[in-house]
Amino acid sequence: MPPVILLVDDNDEIVEFISSILAPAYTIVTAENGQDAMTILHEKTVDLVISDVMMPVMDGFELCKQIKTSFDISHIPVILLTAKNTLQSKIEGLETGADAYIEKPFSPAHLKAQLTSLLKNRDHIRQHFASTPLAHINTIAHTREDEKFLEHIHNCILKEIENTELDVEYLSKYVNMSRISLYRKIKAVSDMTPHELINITRLKKAAELLSSQQYKIYEVAMMVGFKSQNHFGKSFIKQFGMSPSQYMTQKK
Image 1 (cartoon, rainbow, N blue to C red):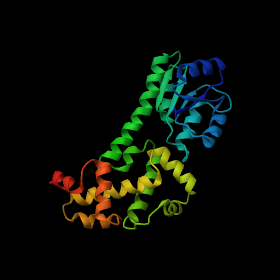
Image 2 (spheres, rainbow, N blue to C red):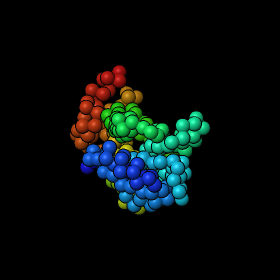
Image 3 (cartoon, one colour):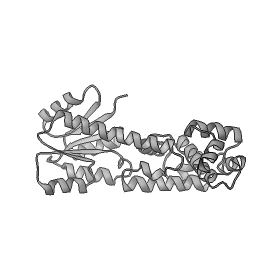
């Protein structure tokens, strides 16, 4: 499905103009101010926010600040649009956590390129994390809130990594979140399900143990919660494109 873009602006002409630029490559949702936008963000799945700065009720700076400090939605990229071209306004926008700051009038091509770049860069970072054995989970965090969340989940999995029955039910109890909320947050930040995140954490820990050259492959498989060496080997190849023995040889 096309990425969902939340467009926040109280000017109908601007909303219509930007919508015409982005459709049909993106699904457009609109709000007239920051307060309405926050309501939508907590009700719908949104991939990126484009917001004007000068708006009634809640302006773009405050909206961006609330997004970046709200646990459930802090992962969402924000592009701020403004007629202000002073250095101070740019600094203020970036200090609130904005991922990009574009001055009006702007080039449609520039806006589309910035939007595409933000979404693609996040995909590249996620792919690098998933395919690189020793890449740390913090590499996919985009805010301090997300970093703390991922560290918490990571530590929880490591604590029970030998447990072959470790599942989303255990994780949800550990972080005191409902299964649905946990699923949504992990999916939004990492583009993985909780089950996939548990599995990749097992495999990355296995890669770390294999790198030490201190354990046999079957020992590592048990240490990270796989029921058989065969299953472990197949999972390792699928994730990293090489067998555990090939990885050990490479690390020598």
